Amino acid sequence: MHHMTLAEIARGLADKKFSSEELTQVLLARIAQLDPQLNSFISLTQELALSQAKAADARRANGETGALLGAPIAHKDLFCTQGIRTSCGSKMLDNFKAPYDATVVAKLAAAGAVTLGKTNMDEFAMGSANESSYYGAVKNPWNLEHVPGGSSGGSAAAVAARLLPAATATDTGGSIRQPAAFTNLTGLKPTYGRVSRWGMIAYASSLDQGGPLARTAEDCAILLQGMAGFDPNDSTSIDEPVPDYSASLNGSLQGLRIGVPKEYFSAGLDPRIAELVHNSVKELEKLGAIIKEISLPNMQHAIPAYYVIAPAEASSNLSRFDGVRFGYRCENPENLIDLYKRSRGEGFGAEVQRRIMVGAYALSAGYYDAYYLKAQKIRRLVKNDFMAAFNEVDIILGPTTPNPAWKLGAKNSDPVAEYLEDVYTITANLAGLPGLSMPAGFVDGLPVGVQLLAPYFQEGRLLNVAHQYQLNTDWHTRTPTGF
Image (cartoon, rainbow, N blue to C red; front, side):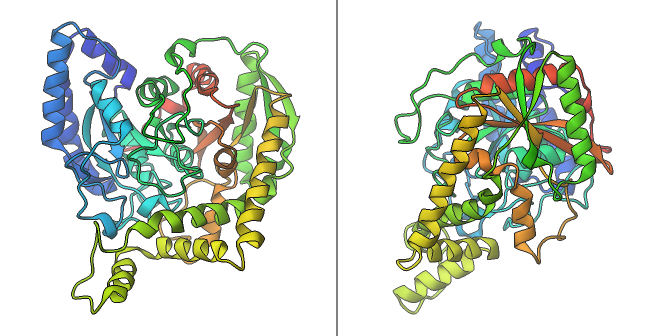
């Protein structure tokens, strides 16, 4: 059962080959057996899962149907879940039980999805390796000595290890696509505003976006269908009709114009990954796509701009965690100032503190124009590059990451080296574009992903291209040894 995709589970439940309760019990037992190797979960929700599974079986018995009805999933631990710990991977929120469900959680529950638990993540989604979590690092199931990527590494590791078929995740600068690449999954960051951020604990509000992590594009289409849609509770949610993503999967790629930016193939890219990217281009050419070299001239400025904007927004968003209203509070504070200082100093980890400091500096009176304002101008230039490119092509293709997954601890002493691993993913967040990573091969036994970018609200096109690619390749079917 654990090898089935979401689509296969939907068909099996519809054909009464098994019940949601049976499937849920199998997966909960598998998590208990295998997750100690991975550390991919922060909290398990056995009672909730079994009650949701029984309810889903009852709904099916009454004639109700739906691709997610009775399907087991997990949520990244920054989506608020009523009455269940929502920690954001931080000591600061270790004791926080959300009083309500995030919109994404509520929508998926209404569709009948079964929540198995909350997955591990970099603290407050800040990291590219899932090593900054208060609950310890997550291991990559393809090699337990390597990182699974971050910040959605818990969701990625759990799905890659076949502990469950799919999971929710979030992407601020590549945190869905990069772990998808590192663990041989398909991960989709939707257009900014496509998925509600209400109840999703914020890192950088103008960049964060929720999305699906699964083994196939078909499964991502199913999960995104349940997540997407306008939400009046979220001021950044866009009132745009949600298409049937599964219906567009089988469209022909004949005549599809795919742009390959020349800037992607610089000295920083592992040549073995470059070769796999070129192989994927050839595969798409066989399916009728037309390949064209394009240019994104301002890409070189994206990382410095991102690492000004994101920490600036983080310093503002995290100011609410002060030891007064909720979350961690230090013991025996001498006065209010001591309460603030020690609660924040003890509650936040090193990476979060580093980004708060950078952000507060960039927003300070003497430096706002020099850093934050300039970074926002660069952001606009990055967006303009994409708009110009999409006048020439339908899709942009390139590597998801410059290197395969590195060893645990290898970049801990050099945060900037870790930041540079986001070079290909952060531009989509700066511009608000949808992006998808799909499996494209292996380097030294570690998975490699290829990234697709599309114009706003063209998630269906990304899923269509990835699905057609996956019908003609088998990279996405490979399973890590031991899982």
